[in-house]
Image (cartoon, rainbow, N blue to C red; front, side):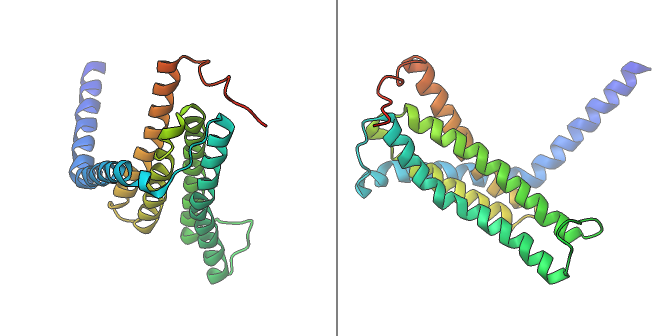
Length: 198
């Protein structure tokens, strides 16, 4: 009896995964393609922008923090969406019960905050271990993050939001992946000595 219920759950899970892939697969592939293309384009063209050569880890982290200001625009946009819904529907700021619009905008704000914090942590950690001549990845990842957040938010009620989610995830996981690679390949203490606070 337990074996048949387990088997039916496995079949139901397989059908659900198949349905989700049919619905969202093209958006995931498009997001991966756009992310990869933009990262390759940035790798070739950002050096022409004159990224400074910053020798200390503190300077590299400060450089990455400057890009956080641009990414923060997605936070401001999400906050203004909540304010707009509250003012349009005359909702008491402490109560979201019974209002689908306010609940949805608050979920967007929560999701944006979580994504912003996860990406910022990854980007700052990456900046602390990058070599000075590889800082061009920071504006490229920041651009991907911003593009991903806005395309996700624009299509929040449509399966196309998966496109934005994928771009956002690529930016975050690329930052974490590069950070772990640099950290483990260079040794866990390799970049601690040049970290001067001046």
